[in-house]
Length: 311
Image 1 (tube, rainbow, N blue to C red):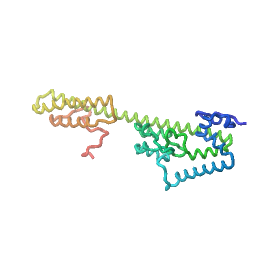
Image 2 (image 1 turned 30 degrees about the vertical axis):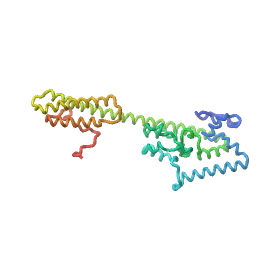
Image 3 (image 1 turned 30 degrees about the horizontal axis):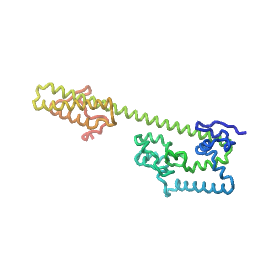
Image 4 (image 1 turned 90 degrees about the vertical axis):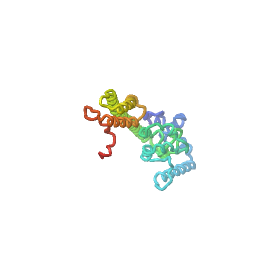
C-alpha cells in the first residue's frame, strides 16, 4: 500500500495521491508537479501507445543530444544566454552592463534584467541568480519562462520518473527538499555577507569623512584667528587672509555636512583638495603651521597614496 507523505513546503505535495494522479489531481497540481518535480506529466499519458512512445522517445533523445553538443563541445556554437554558473557569476561581477543586456534563452526577448537590477550592486545580483537562471540547463530566462522552458535535465528526469518506484520517488523528493533548503540557506548567507560588506564600507566612509571635516575645521579656525590678530602682518597679507576665510568656512561646513548627511559615496573630492590648497596658501602668508596633540597638522590621510617624494 502506498502512503502519502508531505515532503516539501511548495505549493503542492507531489507525493500525495500519486497512485491516482491522473484522475485525482487538479490540472494546476499536475502542471506544477510536472514543471517542478517531473511527476504527473500529461505527455506520459499521451505517449502510451507504441508508436507515440517511440516518437516521444525520439524527440526527447534529439533534445538531449542537442544540449549535450552545446554544453560539452568547446567548438560548438553556444547561445549567449546559456552559461555555466561560474561564467555567469564572473559576467555579473566583471561586466554588469553586458549581463543586463542578456536575452531570454527560451523566447529570445528581453529578460527585463536592466529594469530590475540596474541600481543593484553586482554582489547582490549574484546572490539572486536563481531568480533568472536555471541550474539544471544553464539558461538565463525571463520571468515568463523561468519555470516553463526547455530543460534537458528536467525532461530526462520526467522520463526517469515515469518508471520510478514509490520508495525511490519519496527518497528523491526528500533529497530535492534538502537541496532546496541548503540552496536557500546559502543564498541568505550570501545576502547577509553582502549587507555586512555594505555596512562596513559605509562605516569606513563615515570615519574618513570625520577626519576630513575635523581637519577642515582646524584650517578654518587657524585662518580666522590669524585674520583677527593682524599684529605683525602687512596689510596686503591681512587682506588675503580675510579673503581666504569665507572659503575655508564654506568648505569646512560642506565637509561636515557630508559627514553628517552624505548624499553620495565620494569621500572628500574637490572640497578637500580646495581645503589643502587654502591651508598651503595660509602657511605661505603667515609663516605658521597648525599644531595638534599629535604634532603638526598632517593634510595627508592614511588611505591616500604616499606622496611622490616618499615613494
